[in-house]
Image 1 (cartoon, rainbow, N blue to C red):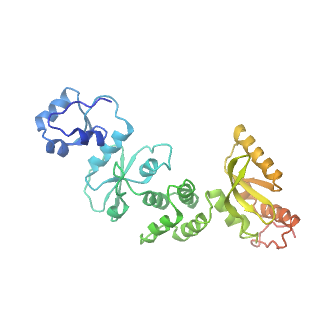
Image 2: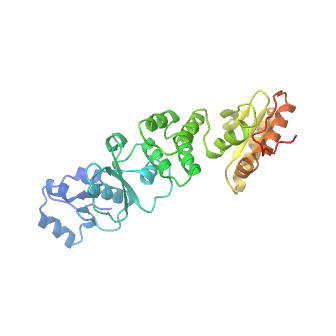
Image 3: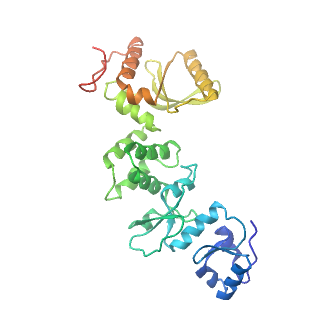
Length: 319
């Protein structure tokens, strides 16, 4: 991308904003209305939104489009929701619309390709240094959880943020405490409590919530780091007193390379005297009682003297 030369214009502003500037910025930097019009007319500049220009020709890159959306929405605006999640590395695919948060009561005309959100907590939500202006990762995660179409999707954002180490359960809990209203507050608080113990995915949460706790299994050690063959591996749930490891795989179809990696890890565990039990999403969510019975039997064979309990009237535990 080549930024056109601009008389009396601060090149630093253009570089910072990926070649994009607003009309008030251009005027403050010394350009007249006729100079702006001439640049648009001869194609050296292009209009991205009313009053927002790209000081270059050709297709604008993603960062330029993000800057354009924020500049169009006003000085207090920031990127939020899915777009903030994208910038924080929590989403690999850009959302169809660019999500922008503005102060409640703002009078902003609809912006093409932009989803506007309104909040009374704009100053608290904004990250103090990151550019383009964007919400803190905790605020983006909680916004997405509150807007999710299901509890599972809401929990997924919580565990994605904690599991990727973009933030911590403690920071998310503190941010949620500042919100007078929060959808699914109780469920999210419970999930954050488990995330603080090392639960890093929705499948791991469901395992604790549907298999381990309701059936009286001993608590496993979450994301326990061990070194096997000179490499570090993390065990989803280790019952270290009994030499039993439970691994949870949330993938519907396991690629061959990853499957062989699992086999090598299981073999390495066996060499250390550990037995590995491996379960997927259907096992944990559709057959939790049978999974609990299998784990309980394995633990008893290795010295556990506890007793499984029925999770409810329809529990499928034998006997």
